[in-house]
Length: 428
Picture 1 (tube, one colour):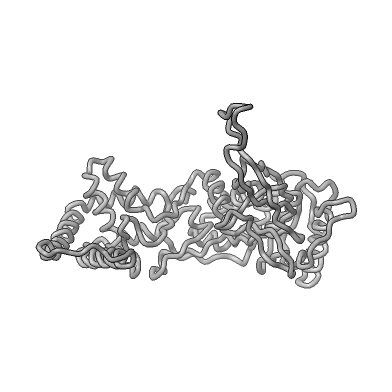
Picture 2 (cartoon, rainbow, N blue to C red):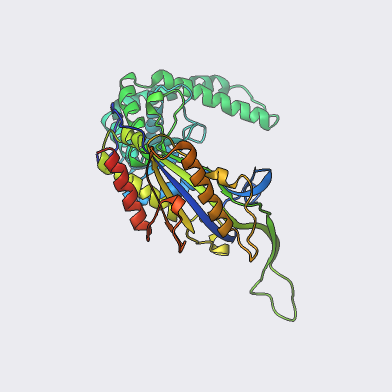
C-alpha cells in the first residue's frame, strides 16, 4: 500500500510490542501558543503548582498537518462531507440542489444509528476520512444517480403533504427562541426519518466501505465513529499535554495600536488599546507511536509505516504551534530530544518534574530540567530494567553527552534514521 491509497481493513497479525517514545525539553519565550476560550494561555496544576500547558489536541492537529504534507496525503475531519461531495457533483454537471440532496442521501444509506444530516446541510457528527473518500462518494452518486434521485423525490413528496395541510391554517410566529429551536428540530427529525425510510438499501455496503476507508493519516491518528465499530481505528499515535517543568505565572501585556491617520498636534490617542496574556518557560513534551498498531492499521505495509514513523517523529520535534506567531515569533527548537524504542510499553517521564524545577542561581530552568530528566530516566531504567529498551539516544542543542539518555547523536536526521532502523530491525 502506498501512503496515499485508501484501504479497507483486513486481518493482520502484528509482531511483538514496539513503542517509540519521544521526549522533548523545549524553551519558549514570551508567547501564547495555546489559549483557552478567553484568550488566556492554557495552564494545568501538577505537583500542586500551576504549569503552562500545550494541549494534546492542539499538538496533534498541527503535527498531523505536517505529517500529511510530508507524506503527500490528506485526511479531513469535517461535518461538510455532503457539501464537498455536492460540489464535486456540480462540477460534473449535476444540478446543485439535486447534488446536495443525493450526497445527503448517501449518508443515510449507511444506516448508522445517530448519524444524520443537520438543518445546515452537513452531518451531525465530525467524520474523519481520506480526502479521496469525497471522490469515492461522488463516483458512487454518479453510478447510482437514478436510484438516489428517485429516493430524494420520494422524500420531498412525502414532506410536501403535511406542508400542504398546514398551508390553509394561520400559524402564529414562534413565541421565543426555544419554540423556534423545537420546530427546527421537528423539521430536521421528520426529514431524517423520511430519508432513512427511502434510502436505497442496496447502497448501504458501498457507503460503509467508503466510511471505513483509511489512509496513512487515519492509520496514524485514528478515529471513532459511534455505533459503527468497523469504521473506528485505534490510532498509533499518542500525545501527552505538554507541561512546563517549573512553576509558571501568566503575564499581562498592555498594548496600544497607533492610528496612522491621526494628525499630530490636533488629535491624540491610540486607535485601539487592550491587554493580552502571555507565558514563557521550559516545556516537557511527550508522544509515543505504537509500531504494531500502525502496521495493523496499514495492513502490514512496512514501507508506508516507516514513512509515517519518520514523518511523525520529525513533525513532533520540529512543528511550531502557530498561535500569536506574528506577535511573538516563538520559533524555537528543542534543547533536548530523547528517543527510546521499547518492546514492552510506553513510558512517560513527566514524573521527573512532579517537584517543580527551581531556577539556577544565574537564571534559567534548562539546566535543572535536563538534570531532572536524566535522573528520572536513570531511575526508570533501574526499576524496569533495560531488557525491553531496544534503543535509546538523544540529540539537540546540548553540547555534552547525557549518558543516562543513551548515545548522543549530532543531528535530527541521524536521530530519526537511527530510530527507524532500530524499529525495523526488531520486526524484520
